[in-house]
Length: 497
Image (cartoon, rainbow, N blue to C red):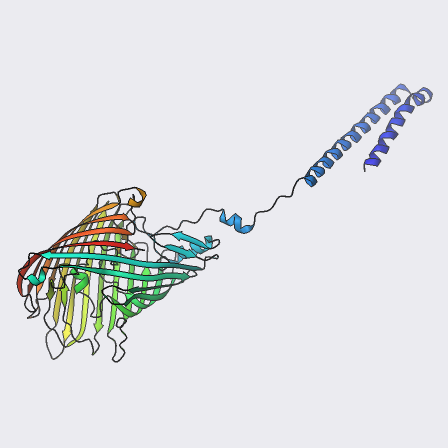
């Protein structure tokens, strides 16, 4: 291409050189002017083509001499993207683990995962696979208590004791957005107990409603404090509504539970047998239970809670003894209890209760009441147990109460200024009055307790608790009969992973 341009240029120059002779012989002045203009235009066109060609050649030479850029691998590009932030169900509680998130959160996490990922949450890490399909988190709970009682007219009640309220190890996780599991074993009080142990499936019904189904060894969904884990209760022990108005098998049973969740409500239904006990010589007791809660008022700083629950159980032939001795002054003084007296020949029981409370700012209030009806054999009349409680708390350090609107229970608080980061932690003052009545039986007793407490949360998973309890019992049977009063001071150090 360059040589052709050069040849054209030479021809043009030759033509220019010959122009005077031609003009002298044959051309007029007008013809000569037209020819000069045509030659000038041709020369300008040739010069523009030469300039363009030289620029193109220079660019090609520069490109060939420069090193080729190394494209970033796809994985590195994805890792540079900011991690997805999955919102908890409420900003004032510790974000839920793999077994407690909903299907939308599980899908969002899986869609953003790149490479093996580890996140440190409340004490222990959450592991996720490279494709976001597999999720795993260790679980643990250590609750150490000390309790001292005085003021009773019975010296056998004036004791100082220590104990492990909980010493648990476990795990939870998920496979894909739908399947999840959880398992925990408790080693406290010189025994090894399987507590929570289930697998489940979750999905959405609509944009606003989702559900899950769990199968295994399940924790009751019953009453406000009864549905709150022992690591999240605002007092060292749950109220008498939770500890007395309860199925005969206790807090756990093997079976199936379905739960449905809406924007400001949840409902659950469960059918369970006995808890894990290794006894298969007789039929299990059968328990059907249900609970629902609703938040008719729900803002960023305030909330109203309304709840209803109930259960019905058909007792096994091996579970007809319904004798109850319920703690009233703390878990670790076994002598301070309210007793039914000996109660044999139970056939079935039905229990139910109501919940009403809420919070505004750092102040929360919760009231509960419940009744249990025990049906006895041999034509004897039914026996009714009654309990109620009112409790309150106030966070002095700016935190909102750790209310979980998805479950209608308390969780672990998200501390604004943790001690381990140089802050003051969270400080909560608490108070409660509770009452228990077994006097429907001839030998049944009654009692009440008033508690003042303070909780200091060093961070979201470590806390100190102190409870002072003024209690009263009036038993008609057992070693400590008649009216009796005393004071119990209890303290706890708790760590939840």
